Image 1 (cartoon, protein in one colour):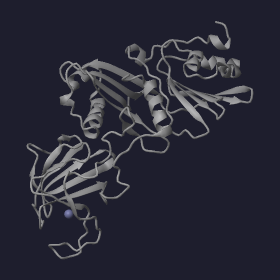
Image 2 (cartoon, helix red, strand yellow; image 1 turned 90 degrees about the vertical axis):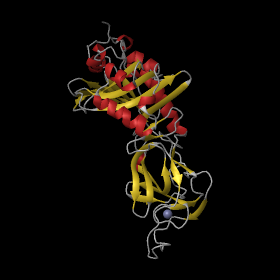
Image 3 (tube, helix red, strand yellow; image 1 turned 180 degrees about the vertical axis):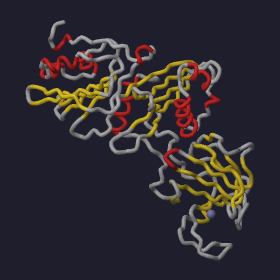
Image 4 (cartoon, rainbow, N blue to C red; image 1 turned 45 degrees about the horizontal axis):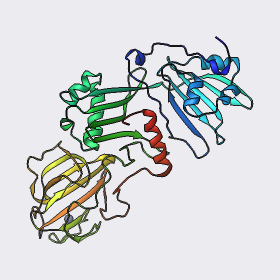
Length: 386
Ligand SMILES: [Zn+2]
């Protein structure tokens, strides 16, 4: 083996992932990145060398030569498929640090110092590996996922994301749908996280990818950068008149006592269809004192919506049902304490009521600018769905 920068040879270790014959994806994770530095997070592919990685990510290969002390060379040889490597770049896009995560909880840190580099072994976090699973729906999504190695814990995450956040019922995923799943697993197998799911059937395409930009909470986004569930529609009715606003100190029109009004009232004829303002899951269907016939929906990002004084519920609607955005859940009425037909509509984040008319209501949440750019690069590197 020659010890020049361009001929690092890769030692092939049969990692669990390689043995399973699954594909390893490469990813860039902009989280924690600042304007001045950038980093690439890479899952080593079969036959990868540090040089091939540098070429793939358009990094200057001469940067590698700058890092070549015998000790660094020795470290760089220890690449194997599935291994996680993080390359940190400074503002001039020069490599400032390379972190190589190994099996047995070790990390090699290569730090650039002027014209040379230092190598140190550091106590690491548990290495994370990406696992990609591809299959076609034959019978049902759940059965086929299990047959392709998706664990019950992983399936539960898929259900949470696809059904409860995305409003797509797993049972309605058609046979012949091409499914791509990417999970992030720790080496011990104790932790697993759904990173991406992609569903393709004929010309329809649906995807959700977990992404975190800067200090924002990680969330799942569609491939166009819209957050899953798409934020809230402003109103759950098409034709209405706002008869009462959000008022934390209001004298109740029937009870004549100060009683906060934690929602808005939308006057509309009895029977007008009421629809869900976002995809979610039915949390409650039934009679609530004062509220009359009430539906409560649970959405992503800890949001709930409440629809009260209904004259009826959508046929068969029950707790646990998965609801898509704009799906009809009932009809306007005057059940409970209501003087005239209207819909009482509330939005809550956790326990806190939010004014549904507030300009800051999360009516949409979409990645834009740098965030969208990083997101698209991330999806490209996951090599999913395109
Ligand atoms: Zn009301």
